[in-house]
Image 1 (cartoon, rainbow, N blue to C red):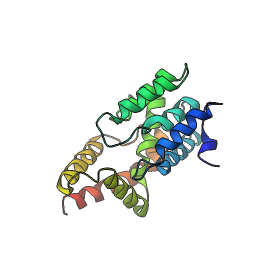
Image 2: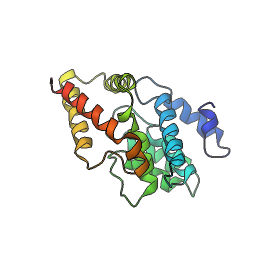
Image 3: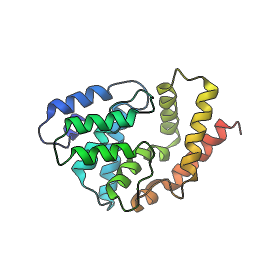
Image 4: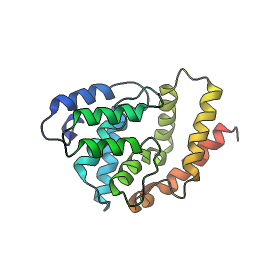
Length: 194
């Protein structure tokens, strides 16, 4: 199935095509990332995670729709969703997109937990894919000097590692927590020169 065929909102192919064009860029935050997030949402749903599939999939389509490494990427993506989507989706999709700025959803928020888990599941990828992801993130921040990138990247990873759990849904913890912890530890070791 093509990525275009995975658009969750009946009709509105104009908006789908605008989003596909926005995701067509180099670096990690590309169409492969969107495809992987959608795949992981499918996997979470199949494993019993309870969330509204249309809303959360729309949030996946929008969550990195604007991405140029700026501090307000998520806010600009959320604002796009608010402008472009009809009710009842606009407000909720925008809220979910804003959550991806920090990946700290409430445990009582199944939609946000599912989106956060699907977005962060790259942390549990096999070593070759994980290394490609890291290289893609570095490409996203090509203008940042190496020392600054390493310090910033280590801070982000330490923040994730400090959480009691990387993942918020029970299925995601079972599927990905151990592998994500191992990858975080390995990359943090590499960043610190261990």
